[in-house]
Image (cartoon, rainbow, N blue to C red; front, side, top):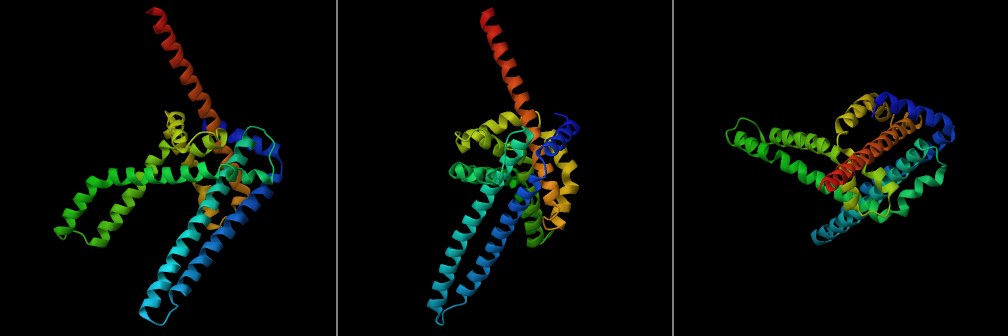
Length: 270
């Protein structure tokens, strides 16, 4: 998997796809902005509902209702954003393979919404567990340092949180390209998708990391411009990752063929 080749192939695919990609990207970004604004509105509504009630019992009841309602609506909005992102990944995959696409491609994630949500929840849970497991030895060291008054509690929490985030980011490369696999094979369960992702990513994690680093300036530009630069750069990024996924699939199939050939030769020798 060559980075220059992947980027060149992504640019060529986008050139052939035409200007409609930017219009679809604008629709996608507007939808994400609307969901973010709705989530912010829910938080404001939650604060107002929590402030209602004159008696203590009424205040507690209002706060409980506001909290439950806020959590439920926020989860629904977050899952909608995840499924929209899955649809945008399907767009990038179609562009990389020179297949037909339209604005309706953004809704493909909702056709497999159950598996998409389960994949998101399961991968998030696994990353959190691995993050805690990898940072557990350090937590004892930080606790000892706090008891000896070498650091404050706030410093210990910040250090542990930061290192846990780093550990989760590193471990996430184990499951990279899982969303593309689910798009390719929607009949698979979330657990099967993660298992396939581990096989596809084998031997390519460092290359994916270097690809991420090469795209970091564009990602920062999109963040600084509140996503506006993404109208032009987001199609390039998602198509490049789709091209990388295609290359990794070929490598995984080659490994599987070589393994089967070795097994066949050993069986013949026996």
